[in-house]
Amino acid sequence: MDPSPVTGPLDRQQIERIEATLLPVVDRHLLRLQAHCLVTFQQIAMPTRQGPLPSRDRWQDWCDHQPQLADDTEFSEQLMMQFTVIAGQLEEIARKLNRTPLELELNDLIDQAETNSRDRLSDSG
Image (cartoon, one colour):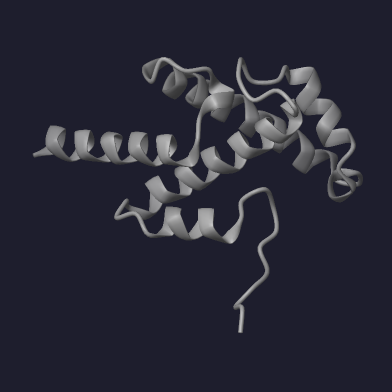
């Protein structure tokens, strides 16, 4: 029996891939946020599959059309702030990989998270 249905832009396989990493809990949480935002940005940008992330106006338009956000302005504002933070992180990862942000994939985010975690460990040791 399936323990719980998947809701949100990530599918079960993507969630399991993130959970299978040996990253610390905090790093896995950030990775989930990045993956969630990336897939959402890619959905907002459809059918475009490369290039920069959609504009903040497009994020807002997307939020305004989500029924689950209709009556929760506070959460919608928090989500927009989260999008802003994660967009900067995705743009930096894309820059390091010499790609556009919309071209990023989950494996790119996992590789970057694992690299960052290893770097922190070697810096502290």
